[in-house]
Length: 379
Image (cartoon, rainbow, N blue to C red; front, side):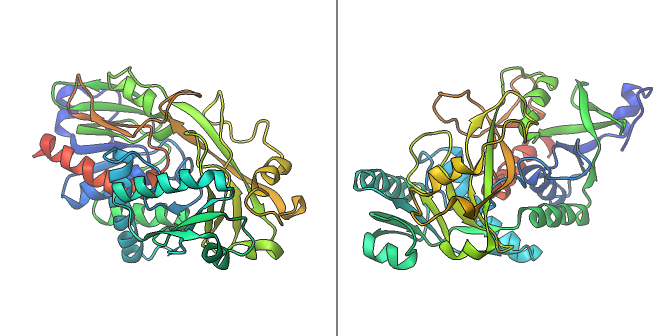
């Protein structure tokens, strides 16, 4: 499957695989898994030395129920469908996860109408196991949280993202997919019905179909595939960890009512490993690999977090990791939906652009949709 630069087009065609996935995050790995399971000869190229080192593992690790998205949008449909599929895959692959539930909290009376709007929208998207709670009932669930009213999403959960990446990769490989790391895509050429993809360090691979799941670099890969319409705007989210002695402040996910389209606000997330995280923040940055420059200090998280948990102390917080969202729109623009579409010039290329939250949750449903598109090309 690996070609050297001196091979001819004829030789490339003879060594052509069915499907080539660019990007070894959780979305790309699920795409490779579904394609290989459908008996398509599949190769996945990942530019880093390990899969899932970027957006897939640098997030809150939440299995979202589908609360915040416009009914009928790809984010809404694929989140709701993906939530069910992801839990099924976690059980099948023995991935550590927990359905802990989530409270979306109106801390002030003035926020209750927003909470009711979220409930109505989420119900319209098909999100399940939702209930509006009066303050007293909600405070019984989370006594340390300032609550005027809340919505309980009993089906929301958390997952070990790193374990998920590893197990999905293993499942894809068991079904015959070839996963190549240290394989950054640097050039692409459409050769009359198939693609010749050149990598840095791994030679070249030819395929009848290319699926661009390159996340933060999906715009650049799309441009190599002949579609220059897309731009990724990196937006960094940072986290703090709550010190062990104070991790009992909440028992489930606790989110504020969101006030903008950039993020859901600083929230509190238990992890399957026993940590409690506060975050993420949201700040557009210039470089899509800048995880550490000019990090926020713990006081910023405390100022946001104390609005939800009045007893939170600055000394409870320790700076933790950061992640970068691959947004399709610049700062100040309305939130954008996922983009999953064929390249207009070359229908044997599928671009996935702007796969930010709820991309982790939606990943198996995204792969399901990509497989249907792949059948049209490969059958």
